[in-house]
Each structure stands twice: as C-alpha cells, then as structure tokens.
Image (tube, rainbow, N blue to C red; front, side, top):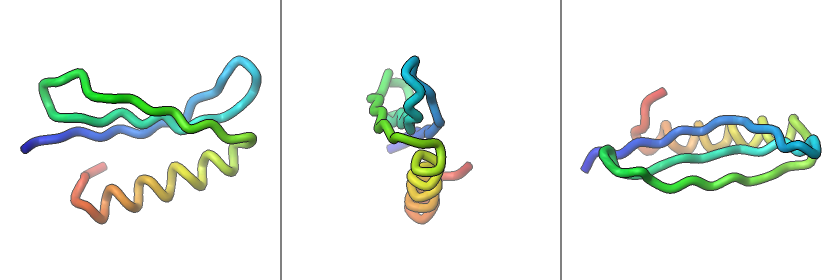
Length: 61
C-alpha cells in the first residue's frame, strides 16, 4: 500500500505557530491535522520530532 505524509509549519492570524500534518493513501484526499503551539521554537521542536519518527518508519524526505 503506497502512502504519503507531509509536514509543514504554519502561522495563525493571532501569532500562534502550528505544525500541519497531511497524510493518506496515494490517490485519495487524505486527512489533515494541525497542532498549535505558543512559540516558533516549540513548533520547530515538534516538527523535528515528527520528521525523525517518520523517517525511522521508512518515509523519505
């Protein structure tokens, strides 16, 4: 089964920084989730953690 996973940083209108995850099977619209953080350093830490976990599971950059 072929899948995709993308991760990006996003900003809200109120200055919060979030990590947007988009995943699913190739050929489908997939699902999307945004986790909001108070500051950019927290969001960047979460982004790095997610990237390491997905690369360990076989996803490529």
